[in-house]
Image 1 (cartoon, rainbow over the protein chains, first blue to last red):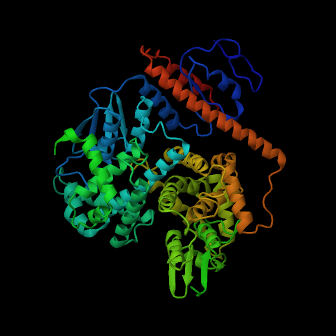
Image 2 (image 1 turned 90 degrees about the horizontal axis):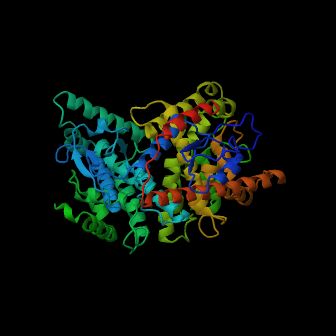
Image 3 (image 1 turned 60 degrees about the vertical axis):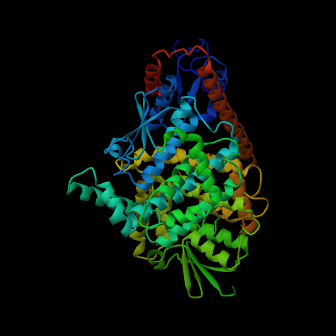
Length: 315
Length: 307
């Protein structure tokens, strides 16, 4: 199979020979090549189209990686890494980790949870949790959902476009409000930071390294809060935002078992991870948990997911 | 309720009442809720440096930030969301969060960080509307704030280079635009037939992108393909801001846009089809292992891509 010399414009480079059955990576601009696209919609040819506008090493590499991911089934020895559970892990990290664990359980994918003190530094993006599957490492819920989708396990297949838009919007609401509020309460509130966050963050390290790293992390989080405009908020305002977010989630959930009626999706996993962690973590004040508890359908939602997916966990 | 309300915001251009996203949100909401506002643009005053824009002054109280201003107006019984159900109110919050997280970084990048747009459009505009000597350093200050915000929120801690983050924020923004387009469908506004705060937010984010004269913007061309969103912006401009010159698209361009729209839909359908085929192939009983060709075809096609 060889490319035609000087093909006329609008015609693909391989007009006469049959296309081989390998993976083709096309980098054509979307609007100019309907003809070759028509030809590859017929099996057994498959193609992945990557837009030229954002031809960017990381995007091409991502597409390539997901294709490689699709080649292997989910192994038995997949592991999820998070910081040490008793001493080190903080509220926001625990929430994210629990969300990923819930999602994987909902998909029916076995994963082993391993606690390591340096999990944050091992992670490719610096965020917890990350999973090690086969020979790939993926961190954070968003990329993990895409990764499992490439392997053929997905929970949001049956949603139509509008519902998928809603699901993504609500997930962003949780990231924007709940996760940010958790980070604020942990690191920007002086009492909590001094009593809980900094000591816990510095447990694996000896003095003075622990102190330095804890203060560095606090500075980083405060910088982020200032950048998004939460730096000037008072604790009371943050609790108010959490209440509003919970109210929105509660109204969306209504009396249904899951957010999209009968079927659990990644939104359910995310909401469960955050709410359950807020409810069960002891902080300097119980205000945050009280705000969540005032919405009874969210409480029963958390209990239901815990019973359905985590019942063999024990404690 | 009767106290006069004054809004300080950036001035307008390109057929818009204001070129600043947050100011536009407040202006649109004011129109939707029937608020009588005196608009005092901060252009050509020293307030460009000192004031945080937009700012609502009502009697003695000063409110900043669009969400706070909208809350304040709602408390004054100037409520455009009166008829929404509880669930629609929750949806509003969710979609606003989506806009903030996914679309704002890309908009900041398009206007303030992208070198061509910044030097050709944004900087001259803001510099020409600031008094001497502010015009020398105000635009660069705003640009640095924008860049810092993008890096702090989207940079992955260790990667403090904007180029690594660019691809991701633009793909997120395009996805966000697609989601908004699906949600809007063929309606005029997002909820029923009357505009609400969500419409104000979406208008504030999209209108500058739609109307500005950007030299290089893949995001703008993506937006222009989604004609229900462009129609949404134009409708609001025509209906509420009495634009004297609603930008008319020449008919030839409209048909071309229609073709592009059809192609986009075809391509989307085809991607879905390919994904379904993937699933079928994967679930077939004999899982044929890939030949080790992906690496070679990827590297060969990379070499043939235009630089």
